Structure formats: C-alpha cells, structure tokens
Length: 242
Image (cartoon, rainbow, N blue to C red; front, side):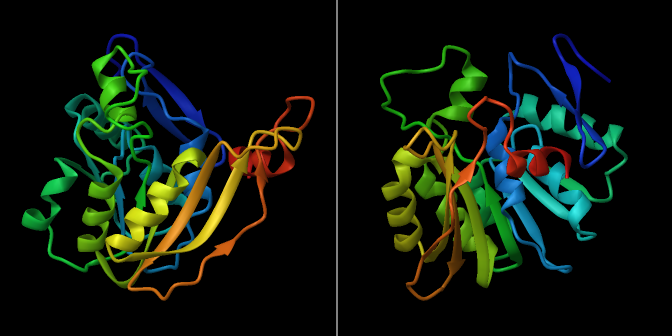
C-alpha cells in the first residue's frame, strides 16, 4: 500500500487515515480550515478542485452521505489519493479524476454541482521564490492553472445558486474577489484567518461565493489558530479533534 517515503497520517476527528509524502505533497492547516468552513446540506453534490492527495473529500465524507468527486492534475497525487480511498474503504463515496480542471467544460455536464471546494496554488507563476521540487511547484505556484481558471471551472460545474468555497493567502484577497465576480461567482462570505491575536495581519482567508449571487459580502469574525503560548486555540482544537 505505501510506497517509498510515504506514511499514513491519522485524521483524528474523522477516524480516517491519509497517505502523505513530504517529497510530493502533504496537506496543511489551510485544507482543514477550508473543509471546516464549507457548509453542507444533506443532498449537496460536491466537487473538489486542486484536490492534491484527496484531503478535502476525505474530511467531508463524515458530513455527507452524497458521493464526492475531485479533480487533480498530478498523477502521483491521484495515485496517493486513490490508495487512501481504498485503504479507508471509501470507493463508493469518493471519485478522483486525473485531469486538468481547464478541461471540465468538455468532460462534465454544466450546472450539476451544489458545492465546489478549491485549495488552489497560492503563488503567482512569476513569483520570485519558486519551490525546487516539481510536485511542490505545481501544487503551490500557478504554473498549471491560475486562480481565475479555478473560478471559471467552478462556474461551469456549479448550479445557479451553488457555492464555491476557496482558501487563499490573505495578500491575494483582491485577486480572489475580482476573479470571482468577473467569472460569475459573487463573493458572499469572508473568514479572515490569523495566527494569533498578537499578530495583527491575517495569513489566509476563506471565501464563499454564490454563482449568480447578488453583491453583498459579510465579514465573519477572525479565526485564530494559536493561543499566545503557541498551543492550539479552542477553535483550532475543534477543527482537529471535534
């Protein structure tokens, strides 16, 4: 089941295991927060874009009985995700698609999903700092897709009134809001994520948009990951442990 340099990590709250490999991909706190802030109704049909090793679908399985689909462009990550799904006996609950999300219009019928989640590459393609390892570079830099590509794909996949939920670096907030509005997904909810209360600048954001929604965004209260002594905050403990 495990290949070289791989390990099983436990998702404690969900009582599941996920295959990770630091040389290829390991999920971050941002993925946990994206799943945490994704609101689901019992019959929502879900698609996850830029799925990596399948962490978001895995986290959402305990909150829905509906089938979850996911798209990832890197074959090695799809392989990791598929073996994770098999290990947890979730073949009937999650389907991974090895494909470029820019091809969704030719493969998926439009307007069939209620929820699209996306943990996109954070850094622009021309960012001065580039990760050396190719798998990391593709996952974290806009070399295979831009954030705008992610929103265009989401617009095709979502039903009218369907929701796109994304996590992104806080310093890219303007890109997120502009690209969503220009591509027909109106930003409706913003959750700023801070390291701790003594650090005044948000590090990441979670934004929820609605396809065809009316202009009107609500700013949620800040979410703090750590207490001042660097232990996890009560809110973050809830995300990890329930």
